[in-house]
Image: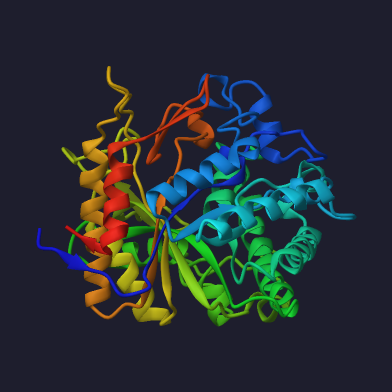
Length: 445
């Protein structure tokens, strides 16, 4: 591979999420989240794991920021815990919760690292879930109020914000598949939730901007490469429907005030409970797009599926991570160039990474060469997209630390830094030092 230079000012960072690393699940006035409740119930999480302690980042954030500085990170993407700020989801803010993020932001700035917060990474206050959660229209306004309060508080030091992380994942996996919190399995409720989340996104963008303290507002969307199984018109149309549902169901809406054509029989607006003026609320164009990408999907037409009319095919003999996800770097290039061509917004790759379970050897070294190979190939596709004209401004590796991986508990390791959970010892992996050298050179070698 030839050396590839990146644009001056390109932001190299890492990403994390509050529930996955913070721990301190019931300390300093924090309220219960849906993930606290979900993990404490039996048979939801592999090995009965919870995020009660996770990486203990709440108490060890200074150590973790020092690791970020050692790696040379230019940006750090983290999420703010809604129930840590508003234990009941609304009402009076919890001062100790705000204090924690004050300390974290100050520590980052003193280390020369730009904070890049996400306002919601799945940990809804359980008190709001008890009232219907994302199927209750009132939640949209409560969310906007929470976002405005946080941005008003931190906005003198933090200028760029993400509203949501992966709204498709927390609605569909949480309300349809039931494998994520709150563990509901109801397709109609899931569709309704997607619409209320779109309302919340529009309201929150307006509320955040109304503080007068922001420079740029976006959302980090889960995306996949969408590849037709054949050159037939039917398979191509099926791949397009998948793209519309999985990639832009929450992006086309906020940008253009319409749902994309993902359903064979048309968008099910009645099932989603869309009101006459809703789409005016939903539309609130973003300043940038965050792309989270881990997979591609090979899509065939399915005449027996009355909804999306698609069938996802398994790719035989594919290279896969320890999570079982296919390694297919071109998918990142495809997603970036498609979003750039369709929306012409600045793009950040807000998550991209891989799970490999390499452990420290007898010398305490984590030789995770497969992760280095993964990152080298995917980052090359980011460079290719930039060369093709896309305005890509940063890349955030997932993740800084090994952490709680939702339904998989602690069985999957995505970090550039190894975490020994019983002792909370951190060890920078070989891939972490590789990433440090990439950042220092601003060049892929």
